[in-house]
Image 1 (cartoon, rainbow, N blue to C red):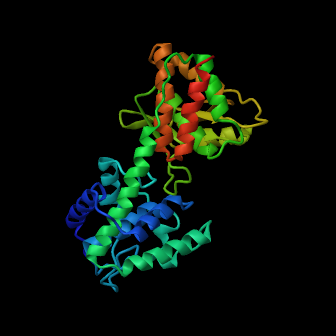
Image 2 (cartoon, rainbow, N blue to C red):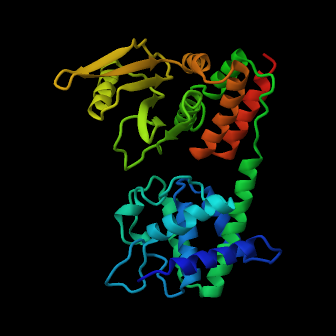
Image 3 (cartoon, helix red, strand yellow):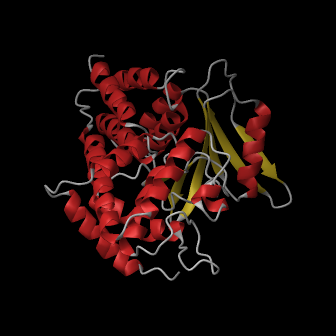
Length: 355
């Protein structure tokens, strides 16, 4: 079907007004909204918002569909509606969809299939069964019922976002040694969602040296450039950083250097923070056929990378420490960690201020 995105945008604004009002919203859909936020895979959340918006815009929509289908006049592109309406609205109106990427439904298993009930190969089958059931219930709603269900989701989404934004860093008086203590505590080897913590840490360190730093989604299916974190200058990647939480060998370092050289990168960083990691000296890969080289700097612990970042930061040391602490929190939000993880970083900084 040809979906009316302009109409969908107006419906979303109407649902937001209901969500922010004192109107009693359906208990069933408030419960479903809370349950969807608790599912393991974050993509279920924007998918839920998208199918409710589709139904509230046009109740002839088949909420089970994921892609437009010429053979099914009720099918629509869920990915398109999510990307064009849900994602920008979440950023503008500050409600959570548990994803900060431009296309949260551009991942496995959503982009492979035509319909929600075809999804398979999920890590948590019980979550999939629950979501299919909810999508089928949404298919039974009329336009008014779908609008109230969407408003119920948005009320929960606004509350989740407010809790996340309430976490703040007070880094006054934090020293360089205190920052190191906070980082070592926060990045302990048994920490939950440690890959996210490491990647956000790397981005915060690189942010002390460059104006524009981008982090790649973990397990990004569209990965086409080496490195997990990129410093961008003039619209082009100036430095690529690979982030690892498991031991890396010299051959791993060489492979990364070769990938960077093939991509035309002159500078790159291998950052590893793992138990039993061997020392990795500076490594240079040269492609003789083109006479170009890629310089690789290797850091084998978080304190080592943090110390170098403070040394070469564009700011004075006190300002660099404060900027790092607050930017690390922002990077953690960007990479979609849980609220308890945000709170843990804030506590680590508060405790370390005594040092």
